[in-house]
Image 1 (tube, one colour):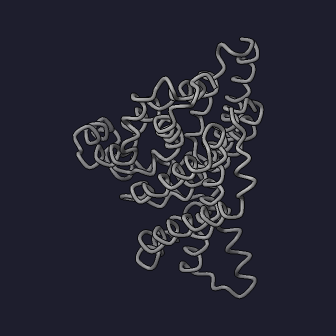
Image 2 (cartoon, one colour):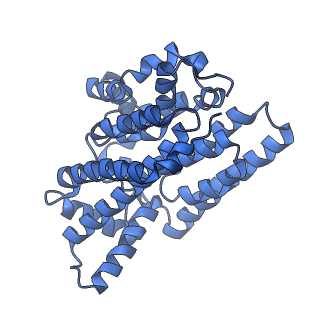
Length: 325
């Protein structure tokens, strides 16, 4: 596995590039989704969460809302208005910072196997498809954080920093509970490489690290009514699945979001690093969960597994890569 020394050598220009891409996507996100048109709706959602009155699952994804509230409280002390416009700017600033860190983390992740040019290509692909990640967007400020946590999780698994997954999962749950899928990713990567007892013990620790904050959030905020029960007949939940199956927009978003990378998976499967091939086990799980419960048309749901597809795509373009690395 080649060392990605180029990240340290060219850190400043790569930081500028990543921050620039992050600024562009954050600017687009702000003025398309949470700017003047919808900032009052964002403020309503925000106040519901920080007042513990939001429906599930938003109420249990409270961390990004309280972070935004904390920053807003600080800015107000310096004379910034405490209104919906200021709150929207705070959310945009947080998105910019988190997406910048996520971009740098992606460069590090891709750099475990690929050179500078290939890794930057992967970074630019992520930002290029980002508008699809925000298609039919509903205010979910935990999504950039979720992307970051998944990239870090993939790095820890690839580098065999398995114990770091425990605090990562614990911290990530209050942002979005889907970080649970890092547990089967870990098991798939290690099931025959480490001692069985080691894999079992770490897996149990990871499950506990997920369950403790998941359960604690429900104790703290109580039993919040799921928003699905407010927006449709929950007894007809299979209708969501039927809508996903029959809806052409959802399949179009899913197809276009990964684009040519769908072909890369099959064309370069044997050249994809072994650990990534194993982690790919979570992709069908991930898609099935969102097919049954989520909305396929919301491209933001797919962002956490994009790094895996990027490795496949770059492996397709880099025939010298060893599948055993």
